[in-house]
Length: 267
Image (cartoon, rainbow, N blue to C red; front, side, top):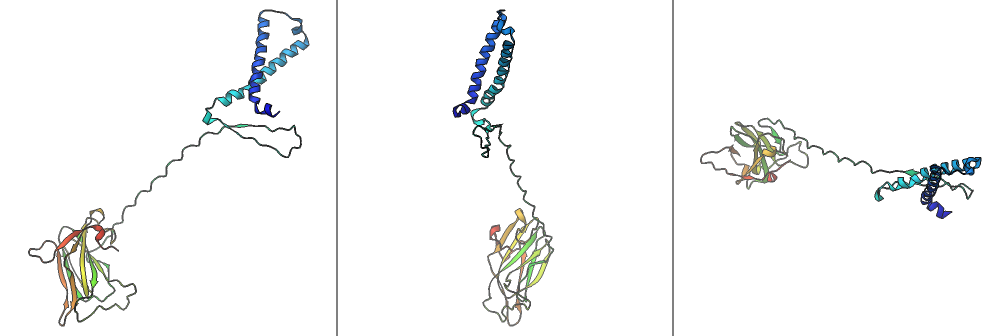
């Protein structure tokens, strides 16, 4: 019985062929007008009907062979079989339906998220973008040319070699203490501020649109720094400060060099 179950499709096909041959023989006999008394009896008519039904049934069942072989080898439908183990009769069998599975639709690639545009920072002339936590007492004057704005940064280096007054923390200062300063300077303007006692290196950046202390002027940023350090201190008679012009001055004594944007101090 197991062999029959495993080869049922081929057996159906063989039966289809056998009954097709019988039908062909009957057709030939009919066409040749060979009369036989058997075919005029009720038994003969029943036999012909049974043969016809078996032929139709075999064609329908045998079609499973052609349905199954119509698929390429790598795309044949999967056969799932459900077995009811609760049946106590050894002759009970379960149906084996065909289920055709097709490849799933391709998953579309995720859409890329566009990079957000940087936010313009509307800085005004003389705006203190970074403030020191130390008392500002030494004067500093800085002037810009008429063509571009400047972001000016003073990086604290050390205490001055000599000063009658040292750096003093502000009363409301909190740790960690800020040592540096930064201001925004609009084109054609001059700003006067006070700076804490100390030695500083001057940095400045220029460009078209200012985006803040981290992005600076974006892709149009040009950065510079000074060769000479600026010394702010207190003498016995005055507060020592500096005046810097950020444009070409005849016989000027304060030179700057262009640097990479990555070398510019950012907050």
